[in-house]
Length: 305
Image (cartoon, rainbow, N blue to C red; front, side, top):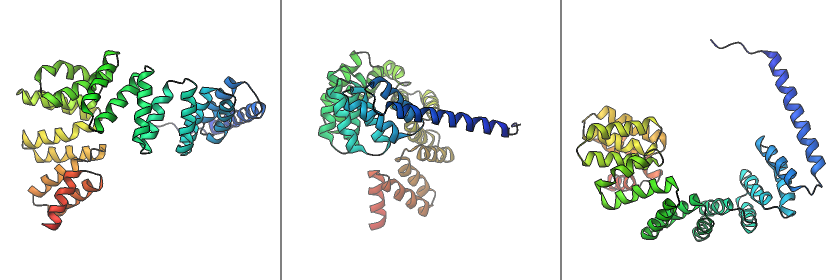
């Protein structure tokens, strides 16, 4: 049974918070005109940790104005926390100019969010050139999304050769999707705990090689681990291999809850087969609204017949 709250502890917590606040405020006043960039950055990080983003920004901005590249990098983070993304771009660029390697990848991610794909590509290439293997993998992802699959594969290979485990896992998935080569089983097994789609691909390989029980176990483990990509193939397995509509529905709904929008489409068909046309239509609408092209196509066909 939960112990009753101790009112005296509330007073102690309030005193601690008050002391911390006074300490931060005193440090802020003391450093407001300081040229000690390390102290400014440290205080800024402490302030950001308690969500005093504007005060953190003041510290980082002064450090950045004094030429400190880590000040610029942290300034960008503080600006992003305040949803001032355009300003954050300039701060990341200053950090890049100052030699902060991680800033390339962060700049690329921000530019991608802002829709500047050409700028994001340049930033990710900068990350890859600087030896940031995770940034190089982001370059590979963006290249693949832009239809440059061969170059994406080459970049992922370079990152994997550099020792980046996630790149090796992604590479195993891409090779499986391109070739359906069952000799990739060992690579997919090694990749499963580093890149969730690899577990789903491993299950696909196991089904293709007549090992349905193991395929099911692999997918159920992925779902148990919270991997959204496991739910759709798991629902399909229950529906196709076991003819268990209730389990399939539960899996599709689990996928929807986990953010796997394509589960709307498959759930809709399952509901339609049961005669629940209203429920199916609702799922097609939800899938279409979430960006699933197959659900949108099915919805148009039903509505315009």
